[in-house]
Image (cartoon, rainbow, N blue to C red; front, top):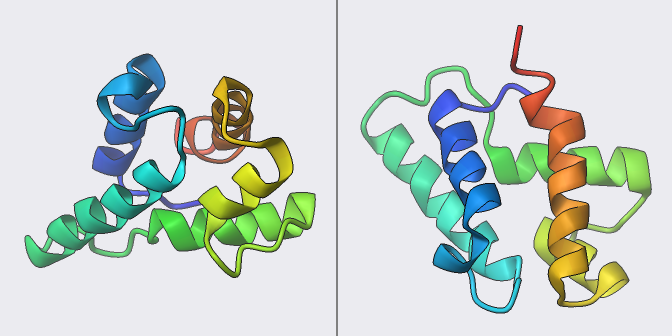
Amino acid sequence: MNTHPLTLEYLKKVAIRPGMFMRDFDLRALELPLYGFEAGLSAAGVMGDFENFNRSFSDFLLSTTELSCSQGWATAILSKHGQSEHSFGVFLSLLERTTFDGCRS
């Protein structure tokens, strides 16, 4: 995934303090602000050739876990793992496999 560095910084802050960004580990409350965050980056002209995180992460989920992301990646994870701290842990684990490791180079 070719995610914008500012989006990665945003997600790192979510990982440290999830309660500041979403209530009751509801990943849907994280997915929507990510759209807005990247829309702001795009409006400021700094998105460049970077990929939209939500679309890229949905594609990754579909290809690696076969979860249907037709209603978004958050709903896909929540439908399989429930709305709990565990589902947030699953999200972070998947995120680590895609963005944090892939963008260190």
